[in-house]
Amino acid sequence: MLNKRISLIALGMLSATQAMANDQAESKGFVEDSSLKVLLRNAYMNRDFKDGNPDKSEWGQAAIGTFSSGFTQGTVGVGVDAFGLYALNLERSEDRSGAQGIDFFKTGDSGQPADDLSKGGAAIKFRLSSTTLTYGDQMPALPVLNYDNSRLLPESYTGTLITSKEINGLQLDAGRFTAESRKSAEGHDSGGLKSINVLGGSYQFTEQFKAALYASDVEDVLKKQYVNANYVFPIDKDQSLALDFNGYRTKLEDSYVRENGITGDDNKIWSLAATFITGPHSFTLAHQRSTGDSNLGYAYGGYQKDQGRVGDGGNTIYLANSYWSDFNAEDERSWQVGYGLDFSTFGVPGLSYNVAYVRGDNITTSTSEGGTEREIFNQIKYVVQSGPAKDLSVKLRSSVLRVSQKSSEYNVSGNEVRVFVDYPINIF
Image (cartoon, helix red, strand yellow):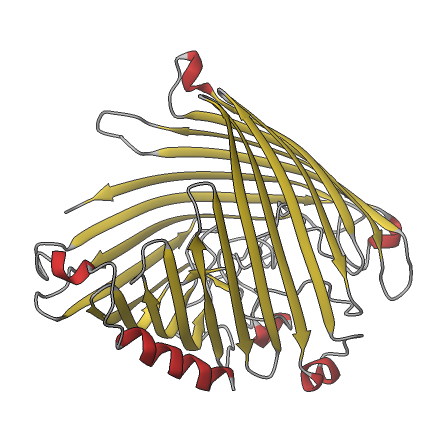
């Protein structure tokens, strides 16, 4: 049914005649609007687990090349997007690799992580007015299908995506993807996804208010809906208050529940964050709540072949209290207080710092109720502002996560450190 609705909406997008925008009319040509970029990334992640669990860490060097052509001129423009990925394993430790939450290099049947990995992909795209149809290998960034780019290499998906921006402020998306490329493995279908249909859009009602509504259907796994409302209250020249509401509803398929020994099939999770900005300072208060009878809580991301997960992208969690822990257990309630500082006011442009404390309670597992967890998150980031290394960024992130014994079935205590050095190079 959702697939049929996607087809009908896609047809409507492509046949729109009363367009308020026409990006294709501004096309300069296939070559003239093309770009080639390379991102050099050195990444390290260490998880010092507690309660007798072995520590895990991975370290690698990656090169991520992306080419995006312009569109040929005319009523219907044609273009090509392509990417090439390579990663070199700098640690190669059988004992320390293999943590699902790190996943730089997938371990093979021998238990050894790969020494390196490489892969690529390409997609063809068509544009009519301000509606674009892309078919092939892509990195979709939607609330119900968001590729993970927070590790060494990014995930990618193979399929069709239509994005329409015919009306100013309105974006509509419809797509179907039939393969998932895991970030830590080679091949175009290493994630185990059968198919996922996505549908939805966002609208900028006013300069201050924006809302979004999306849905997805992962074949034989689950159906998911997402809603967002964001409002920014201007207070003074350098002061504002932003309210951001995000919510998901998921319904697992009966066959998936039976095959994976899951208890319950539905989950609802939402978060409301209030951020007050005054000059270089930002202060955040947030509340997040998970309800429903599924012992998975809010299910997203992962790989179906060996993790028993969903396959809809490792960043498909547009919620306030998601750091190392996602605070998404069955029945969990969590609160966050956060602070951010932009050092540009103090003469150091490009330097920023963020800290947050999140506490969750009321966690339900198969053996207990009323479990708790808490996390202290810190991140400092610097982006070079000029010179030969312009745009090079260094990000140091740490988390201290403590989980009560009652919640040990859901999560594990530990200390995490991430160090990412990204150097983007615009070749043309």
